[in-house]
Length: 113
Image 1 (spheres, helix red, strand yellow):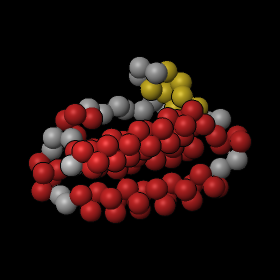
Image 2 (tube, rainbow, N blue to C red; image 1 turned 30 degrees about the horizontal axis):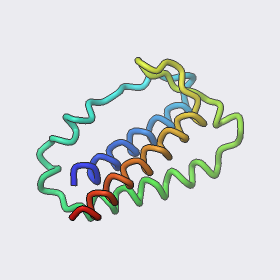
Image 3 (cartoon, rainbow, N blue to C red; image 1 turned 45 degrees about the horizontal axis):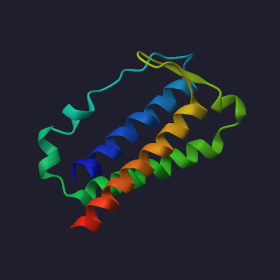
């Protein structure tokens, strides 16, 4: 349940980071405390289906953005306080892995249930 709510939070942040990198020069992004976001009051009250719908909507919007990008756009960067300069092509690879990683967690939990 927490993982399903976490992924849209993470991918919303990623989408915003892409938009910042595409509209500003090497913007400094602000990390967020994932564990604290997972513990905010609405998480316990929100049905999983709402977060899945949110994730689907974010991914649809992100795909339109990604399809509009050329090589120069994928080479644009943002600056992470701990990771330093991150090109968007690296950020995309990270979030593809992130989604698959957590999908595997959910699948594993469902097979144990």
